Image (cartoon, rainbow, N blue to C red):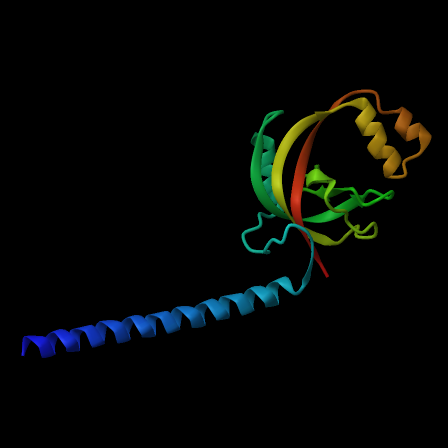
Length: 173
């Protein structure tokens, strides 16, 4: 009798585990399908990332305001592109909710963005940091951005900027 109860118990345990495994596989397949649908509306640049959990510009602006020069945090954010390097697409400036901009460069110069994406929405993933930009670097960016000689010459002081080193970008299509 004990053997029968033991065998019956083992059958119940194994069948329960098998059903749980089947449910888990079904849930995983459903999650992957949902991810593909969400990510299908984005074009990927650099490291493959997902659109979930990205901060909005207001939240990211609060993080930047609390940071000092030299501070950095891992972040993912959604923002609108204000400007892109007209030379190669090697940097872009994103709009923050507080009227500030974020200067985005790409990790290890590993990828570039299309030069015609101003006004489009992107999701960037990587490191957010605050730095002081030298006069020479500001002038270089102004030149890449197509600024006039007078505007470039007017840059005379270093400036505290919000920066971001992106390892992956999603461009909303």
